[in-house]
Image: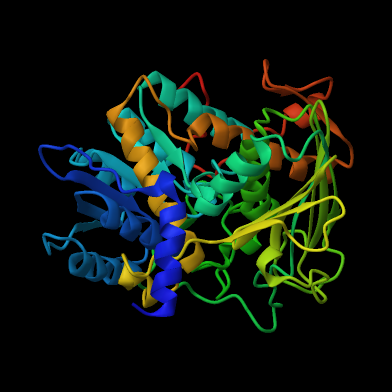
Length: 454
């Protein structure tokens, strides 16, 4: 055994919550995937690693991406079969031949397919955040409860082995003491901010159905940024870096500290540096989420050099307690008691190359996240087996809270004022203008879902 394999094996032994679970089934779990891009494939291939699964269908508006995914899946799934392919998600759902539908599209296409799959009796594994506005998110929750569906959202910090250890051994044990404040953020998190001269308007590629790809979002001219992956640079398709990364870090600290809804959200920022960019999301933003006992802050910027000297905490959540500091990130955690010159306890992300050697060579895989996604799938599959008794760790309700809190932050920045949130009525207290913007207009013929119409 090499030294690296020994270290991996030792780390695996410490992650007792991630011992593989045996799932009793009379046949393989039938899975479909809508959105065959970067994270869709990454999540799907982790599912194939942990349970008896047959990928029945794949769907994407990009024919080239779809064909590549179909070939890859046929090579990785046990049966060797090539999944059926669809360009239109409605056809994939109408077939009604899967148990679980994955929704791994750009954010503006999360709500409609997810709700349609629930109506068809499918459980759903969906990427974060829950859509692009609060009413979409609320509608997804309403549909899950109405149709008794198990819905796991891929906020996989909740299934990250080293963070589970931090929660159990540092927070739950009481080592932190009283929480004083929480800071989250990301530094030097770049998005494609090319200008009109470097990313001019061009015709969409013939392999892409750009009208269907745009769907309910406003129709923007096509450029090389829009697809694939660059869509995060535009508010038409998502909620910027707050909707992309803050949702992860906020959800992480909400889970670690058992937090519910924030009482008030305040945010400020904008495009303060890259003023010639095609991107219309903020390049600089601060948000404050006010909880009953302490605040959680968020900061990001996409310019300059990172002030964070530790690369393991370029995406971070730092919890300041009366007895010390707990630093949490996707790559590691560190517990530093008051007066200590170095961390008393630390753990890196679990890499499981000895068990899953394909992790080392898989294209575009975030290797430090692979163990978390496997844990997330195991949790989701267990929740399906215990339907009505157990909900998954990133149940749609928890994802709705984290996602909607981020939507409120962007709305606060847009309106230039703090927003007091009433979770009982799902409204901003005393702010009619804000409440009128909880549901973004749809481009026809698509119809915006509401909790009453799902």
